[in-house]
Image (cartoon, rainbow, N blue to C red):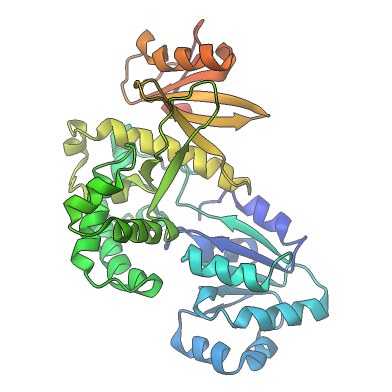
Length: 382
C-alpha cells in the first residue's frame, strides 16, 4: 500500500476538529487514505442503497449505530444527515469523530458549508503525485509513459492498462456521475465537449469556440464546464493581474486533473503514439502544473497558482508564491536545454523586478543547472 503525503495533514486535523472532509476525484484513493490513517474506525458508505435509506429515513438511529470514530463515504448523498451529525458532535465535544469523503465537490461543499461551518477540516486528495510514485519506486520509465499512464491508484495497484481503465472511467462518469450533478439532456454533446477540452490543454479558454464546435449555446458550455470542474475532471489556471502591464489576458488556461485521462480522450492508444503527438508539449505542461496543485493540496493548503500572459504574446507558464515570494516557471518538454527557454521569464523579470532566484525552467532533460538567468530543473527530480 502506497503511503499518501496527505496522511500527515489528515491525522493532524483529526486532533483539531470533530469532522475532517476529504474530497477529490472518484478513485483517487480517499477511502483507502482514511482507512490507512484510522484503521480502528468503522466505515459506512452512503453509496450503498440500504445505508442511504437508513441515513435518510432514520438519521437518529444511524447516528446511534455510528456514534463516533466512523468513516462515512459519499456523504453528499444524504446532505440532511450532516445537520444531525453536527448536533450530535456539539453535545459530545470530541475531535476526530467523523472522517467524511465525497467525490462531487459542489454538492459536498454546499452541504458542509451549511451544516458544519467552523467544525470541519477540509482536504483535497488528487491521484498519485510524482513524489509519491518516486517514493514507492513505481515511476514509469519515461516521461511519455508517465503522461500516458496517468496517476490513478488502481492503475498501479492492479496493473491495469490505461486503454482498459480510462474508457470505463469516462463511461461511468458520463452515464452516472454527471446526471447526479446536473440533468444533461444530450450526453453525446457533453462527451464531445470533454474531448474538445482535451484538445485545448494548456490553451486560453474560449467558450465561444467550444460552443460553436459542440453545437450548444455559450451558457450551456459555461454550465457544463462547471460540472467538469466540480467533479475534478478539469481545472483552470487563472491569469495574474499584477499592474506592471495593462494589456493582460483575462481568460484562464484549461488543464485536466489527470494526463492519462486526457490521453484517452485524445485517442492516444500507446506511448509510441504520444512521442509524435501535436499535444505532447501541452500534456507535459499539464503534468507539471498538476504536480504544483498536488504539492499544495497535500500540505492542506488551497493552491494560489496563476500564469502571466500579455496581449503581445509574452508569457510565463506558471506563477507560484513560495515563502512570500513569487516564483515564475517556464515548462518545456524538450530534453535539451536552450537559453531561449528564459525569454518569457526574463521579460517578466524586468517588469516585476524579480531576480534570477525567482526564475526557473522545468524541462524534460536530466541535468540540473544554475545559469545567470535562473535555475534549470529536470523533471525527473521534481
